[in-house]
Length: 383
Image 1 (cartoon, rainbow, N blue to C red):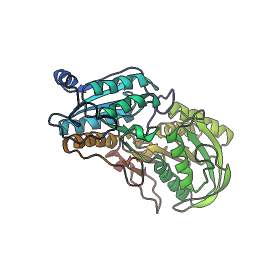
Image 2: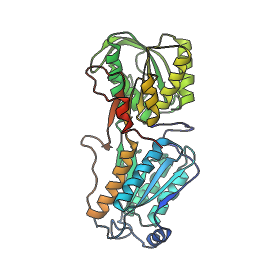
Image 3: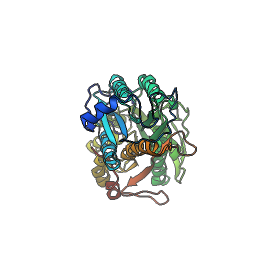
Image 4: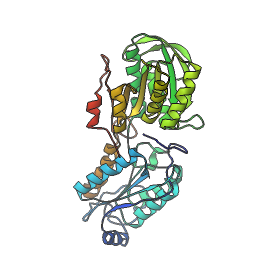
């Protein structure tokens, strides 16, 4: 996920609300008076989301985002609206105004229940929304989470998300192979250092695993051995040391500040792992100011904004994820259920549906599948 302004936990969100209602006001009022939803043919199904009846009228879906200011979530909105328009789905979009705004999301969930909607698609801001989502499921709404599996996972009927561990693993495999046996002097630019967030751990540990470095603890960042031998999963073996490990809040200023501190501690850093592209872009600014070249800067996101950095070499490689696909898949799942009674299913072996990730770089290495910055242009996400 691409974060430009994070003030709280990764699951948090803004406290203002802007609603885009892709439906006539009269139709929404009519739905609110219906007393049930078309997916179930009635109001509550007595617990659990097991709708089977087919909708005879328009399918209504609520998309509840974290924020409208983050391009990552705006891309979800754009894709969901495009897919809804194709299918004839009446889509209501809402979001908060600051990280941590669960109140706005709860209000939007309540409105969807009262309006007799068939489903909710949500990027949860925190566990405070869970009781409201449970209530939605008890009324027969299909609840789909995007981007991050909620805690507990059963809060949503299904999550559409990137395998963040795999995304980190791809850039780790690439980095080890690109080093070609050279010693790795590594800067780890994480999201936080004062809280445990699943996406932060998954990406960090994926990178280390791809590099062939033990993670130390499955539940924490920073527990890996600080020096030793890396043995890349796709090739590349040599010595390594972790020169620094600092938080960035997933933002450009945080990435730049963290990189400046790392370079002051160890000016010989030649590998940078960044939690996301803004952090990597900030690190690139610091490296450029220090006249450092030949540093592998690896990140995760797949936003269109990274393309110039891939082209000029300030970011070496990125693992792209596809938030628009997540949102469009969510709209399709609710529509299909409402019209056919067929429920969506998780990817076999996972507790969620994996929407995929792919490595992009303008400096490919043999044995590591990747696309170019030009190819990323056709699949990247933007506001």
